[in-house]
Image (cartoon, rainbow, N blue to C red; front, side, top):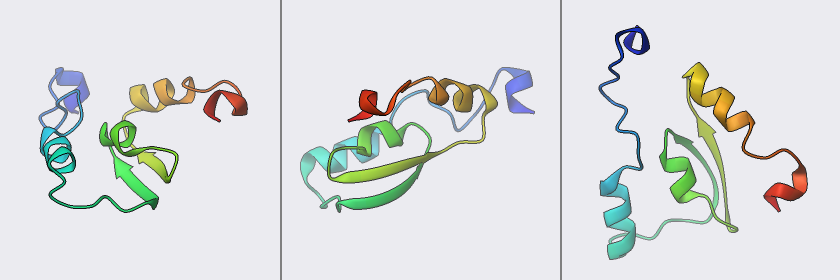
Length: 76
């Protein structure tokens, strides 16, 4: 419904700035391990010690994510 209107109120188009601010201020420790993350924050939270699985329901975003890595060694 929202994508047909051209407006998606919860989609800022970038990582949650409050999350970035908290992480950079070291206000809390981001645990290593596995995480399920909705939206843009998946790219910010992923690293070598944290396996992050992104979650989205937008068909456009899902198709874009499929093209990020062509081969397994592109990721490693």
